[in-house]
Amino acid sequence: MWVSALPQRRLTGKDGAMRFMLLQNYGEVESGCLPMPEWTPGDIKAHIEFQQALNQELAERGELVDAQGLAGPEQAKFVVSDGTSAPVITDGPFPESKELLAGYRLVDVETAGRAIEIAAQASAAPGPNGEPIRQPIEVREVMSAPDPEV
Image (tube, rainbow, N blue to C red; front, side, top):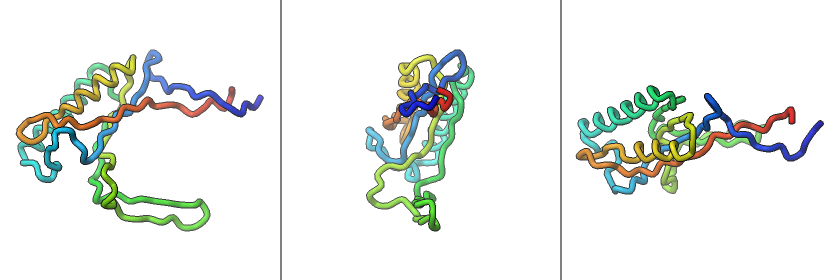
């Protein structure tokens, strides 16, 4: 039987846990810290070590599904297509682009509250002089496609 309004289902992982994507953007940090290319090598090293330690902690707890940093926005390409003609590819970012995705973590946790706790840890990553950067982290639940068998 075909149903026109299929319900959304949560994409669950182990034991019915919920999956959340924690998105980090370039730019926009509450602390007003400098962009990373202007940090000292020691500050960059401390920041990366913090990210790696957080990933290790989450992996040991069985909560980390994946975590990746992305190439800088100066390497971004924007692609638009109508599906019938050649796509239009534009180099980015544009001056009006205030935020572009810098990286993400995909976590498999028991509650939304736990995903928010992890986002808070990531937001407090060290920046220049070891000060927390207070970067906004977007927390979004991962949803599966509707079940075509319903």
